[in-house]
Length: 298
Image (cartoon, rainbow, N blue to C red; front, side, top):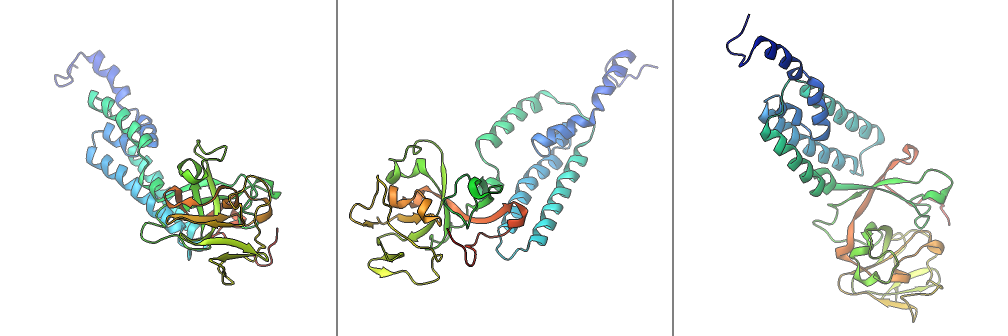
């Protein structure tokens, strides 16, 4: 029997029904853009809530993971709860619906937006993998005999405070004018080193120790490694000393004998700093804030 509200013949109404019941399409869309499957089903406000909530929850999860007092078991619980929330969002998106011309226009715009402008989670933290041995044994690289460390950098760490001596920082070579001599300086390369010198200080090395303005750095401020000037050429310390500018930091790798750092490049401008290294998250046996091991050596 023909339904006058169907807007077509009985055959047309019957053939249109299967397309409207493809709930899996909503799940697929929400995998790409959280909550978009709900918009396809006509639940625009619900979809918007899921979209905003997914980014906010992701940021909160990262902040909790980077909390120094968060135990590994607590981190597992947090990640598991986030995963359950994500599954709930996908299940909620499994609804029949159709894409209209507005959604067809909005989808690529949102996809482009999340590609160009990072979501909240990436503004909070960013994940990296250590490829070199310059920070061993604090951060293990590919040449450490096992899988390289994967770690999170807290991008909010210096929002309300200045970097401190002893901090492990990640910084971009392409944004550091002072180290533009580096062969990779014009590509987006991120380096990980430890701050040993602060803005305005004159850095020298003597007897394996770092001296700032001629004064030995107090024990405990830096790892118990033997610091020395770089012998190889080029070197930024032509006369055995380096004068830092008002916004520069002197950084050295914990694997002093095998680290390219400020001894070669000079100071790292504050504007080049991405953030502070907060957490090693893989391999799981090394989960936690990076620390120079007691009794560790080169």
